[in-house]
Figure: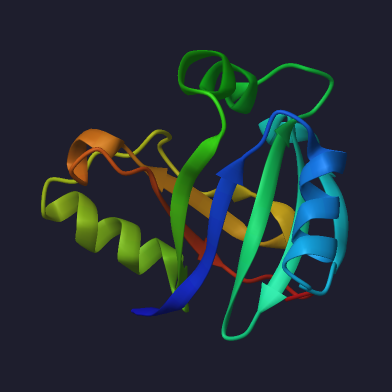
Length: 136
């Protein structure tokens, strides 16, 4: 069952500049950074309970975020819904006709399980489903 909006991800061309903006300009608490090698993404986290803002930047200038920035520029990348049973949610949504970008959840930031729903299934919006791991 979907239990919350986990985070809003924003693709950014300059991670350091964006971290500074969210800390200095908006006064948000910076929780830290994490590189997610499997997704070729550098992430920075700003919790805003009960959700958070996640800045995403290409790790080593490559990966899907690099392509997104090149094609669309900076801006909203995806919405993420928190799940307490990601496998059940994926099965339920697949049965309703949703298409996913991968066959099964993979490891994401904070040791979580993640999977993305194809934007064509959600009116052009990329949706991530996230089941928190041990660290979340």
